Length: 233
Image (cartoon, rainbow, N blue to C red; front, side):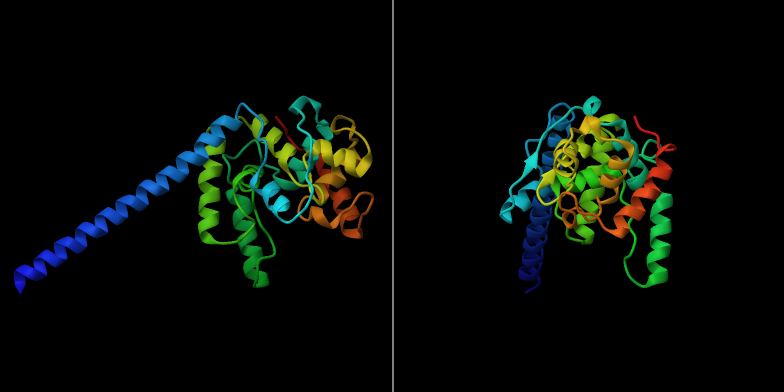
């Protein structure tokens, strides 16, 4: 009986080790897949993103036009940094001060009312992930953010983000947003237009062309006041 029990334990341990090894290899394979795409997109534009594919799956037509960094209004760069990630040039993907403030605010309210995602984190999510909230997704987002920050320059990160962010129902990227909402190219956006586009980033599908809300207008004014201090690459 003792020998049989030892054989069973040995077989169980062997099966556990093989299973654990397979899981580790699968995990590493997934991370290498993500990292390979990050390296590729450091030099080439993405043909699509996870967010775009989800909108296509929902039957939404996608409008997007890639434009290089120098053909995007500096007003829009400043507006997005001022609205989404004021310390963009100073952190390495995670704004720990903003995270602490968001956690304290959420604790006071008893629910999630504030986030602290940086532009790099938002880019990771837009390129690869879903919008669901789970610890697994957040952990993967953190890993991809680390890859992005240690592979790409801040200029490239911002260039990619401005070209893949959603600015309306199926409207992706600064060029498509500028044409859709204002009838101009991304290079021609003025300060007010840029601030308004930055203001609607958290809920872009609520805003069809020409439509605004008191909240968006008030947020636009706030962003305009912060733009002069915003540092961009």
